[in-house]
Image (cartoon, rainbow, N blue to C red; front, top):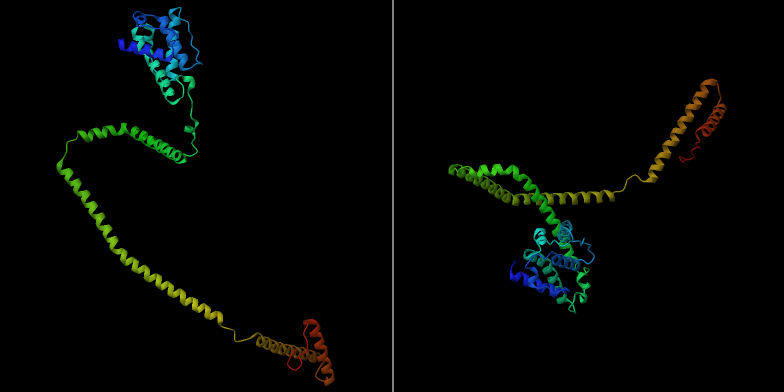
Amino acid sequence: MSYRDLRNLLESLRTLGYPRLVSIENFRDPNFPLVAEILQWLTKRYDPEVELPFAIDSQQDRVIFIKAVARFLITKGGIRLNAKKLYRADGHAVREIIKLANVLTSAMEAGVGHGDGSTPDALEIDLAEFDLSGRENDLKATRTLASEITARGAALHELLEREVDLRESRSDAIARPLDVDEIESGVQRAMAIVSDEISRTQSMMENIGADEANLENKIEKSKADYERHCKKLRALENVRCVITYACCTQWTVKWQCKIRILFLVSLCGSRMETIGPSTDLFTFYSYLESAWYFCSNTFRISWCKGGQC
């Protein structure tokens, strides 16, 4: 314990409003009730809803109280206290208590600097600082950064897993003596590979002009073929059939009449053969008329008059 630590603790307690007067002489000798009271008050000031087993009559009760305070502060605020030094309740405990007192003092000073009053009750919270409606770009950047951090962390984890396998190879490579001839040959091989790639790239760049000219020629040829085919299509669309519909109809009627006459003649001939050659002309015409009626009823055709049906 130093005089400076003890003085800082007393000033912090007075700043925080500790209700009891504490002097430097109180920590000359072990004073566990005072240390327990200060710890309880500071812990209550840190979190008013905390419940601690404040029973210090026996040794076991004191151990339980110190453990409860240390466990609460490490889990709630990340403040690590040495339980053994706190249990000694002398000047060594001052250095542990001042850790919690400094946290409360700095919080109160920060609150007073932003508030209107001089006490923690007068602190005001500006809700405009928590308004994120106009900070969409910051949110997007934060999300992007978070995803990038996650991806790089995963990649780093995979690389660290490979460290066990690569450690021996790295150690062997470092311990192996350097061979100047081998290094020179490796550098020459790398230079040859790079030279081949450069020459290949240069040849490809030189052939770009020829390829472009060939493509332009093919495009022009395709355009000419397209125009020629379009002209041929328009010419075919303008061509009219020489044989009109009227001519086709006349030709069809003509041959239809001829076919009907030949059918009647053959039918009458077959009838004449059945009755014999002694039949007169009247009988022949009667057979022709009956054949015509038979043909008209059977095939639904009409007589052609004057070459027209």
